[in-house]
Amino acid sequence: MVDVSDVAVDAVDAGRAALAEGRWEQARVQFAQALAVADSAEAAEGLSWAAWWLEDVPGCLRAREQAYQWFQQRGDRRGAARMALWLSDDHLEFRGAEAVATGWLQRARRLLAELEPSPEHGWVAVFEANAALQRHDPAEALRLAGEARELGRAHRVVDLEMFSLASEGMALIDQGEVAEGMRRLDEATAAALAGEYENLAPAAWTCCRLISACELVRDYDRGAQWCRQVTEFSQRMDARFVTGVCRAHYAAIMTWRGHWREAEQELQAAVAGLTEKRPAWLPEALVRLGELRRRQGRVAEAEHLFTRAPDHPLAQLGLARIRLHDGDPAGARDLLERLLRRVPAESVHSRTAPLELLVRVSLALDDPAAAQTHVAELRAAATGAPAAPLRAAVSLCEGLLAEALGDLEQACDRLEDAVDLFGAAGAPTEQGQARMDLGRVLRARGRVDDADREERDARRCLGMVDAAAAEPTQPPALTDRQLQVLRLVADGLTDREIAGRLTLSEHTVHRHVANIYVRLGCSSRATAVAHAARLGLL
Image 1 (tube, rainbow, N blue to C red):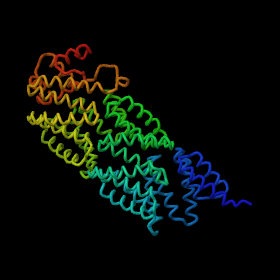
Image 2: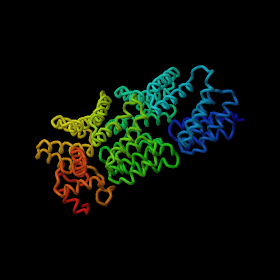
Image 3: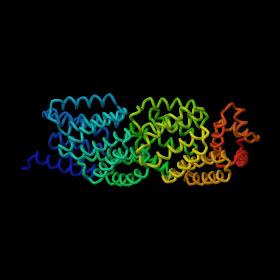
């Protein structure tokens, strides 16, 4: 006669083997068979993971809660704490229910309080480390992740050790130690993709950490290399949510490189994939789609997308860019300063994008002293950062500041550096804008031929963006202030005369004219006026 317990054990073992190979449906069948013959906390736990990967949210939560109860009934506090921990993460990830998640996490802590150190203690620590990262406390995150990594190593739990290593990497990067942080993330991701993790969920989380870090520090080359590997892994394992979240980060890289058609496809798929099952992660796709729309000139659509994720830092950054574009630098400054108040100085790389934009905003407000302060902080953040895009941003901001201070020779040098670095990074839009800035400075120095050449090259760079399919058909949008300036240009006024007429600084008028050139795809006052007339803008 067959022992019922043996049948259940065999089914659980088969289910675990299927989970390790990414055969989620087969795993679900095996665990269900085990539960059909006997109550088993292990089978319920396995069933919860099969449902988790299949994005069966009710089934996952139901199985987790059943496993929790059975572990409790037999006095297995570690097992119960493990289920409480995963339930905490589930309620946060699937439902965005922070209070419920906090309750389950506290339950896990209490269950483990009187037990000897175990892998479960490590999982609690690494989850707390990632919560510290969310509240911009990298020092605490580094401490907790280190504790978790040591527990993983001591108990030979590779997924705990490596996911904790990845969390350490994120904390180091946030503190400005980019090279060391990236080394840890690279190692943890290599282990994940090599199949060293027993539980594939932390492997997926590790991949997401790495791609997110690449976007944060603008290491787009590294991100592109790993994106290919991660995409293959997620497709092989049918890891649907990994594909969705990584698509959002990958699309940001494609947007930067001017591959807007590909970025559009990735972001639309990410939005569709995350809307129903993981709404807490949906803002990651929405804000990046908003940034793509902003670059395409579809400003109203961009603003709508940003307002759908109002608390996301990238949404606030995007709205600030729109305010500056619309001739409201004071409004942009208010948004950026509010954003930076939430990010302490210790979180170095979370501050770089707002600081970069604040330099332009401060100069538009004729406040070079504030711009100088922001440039200094941005320069310090870029120290030790190997990625060319961040160094290019620093050079660009230094050039704009030098221009505002009247040091046109220094401005040319720094803007030339920015053009070269953006080119090396494969960023046609940023390089085109930097060339327009350089052309303006060259023209101010009397180097008209050089200015014409830079402006021609700027149009070539901007023409490299494969945005035609996604661009609107209506005339390019100009702000009310830009239209005022353009009409005075059409009347034959110089920048100095326009500044006097509109009560602006000459530098601000220079900037408006340069932005008009970019919007209209022109490089001179005469061609801008002629093109605007053809479009009916005058």
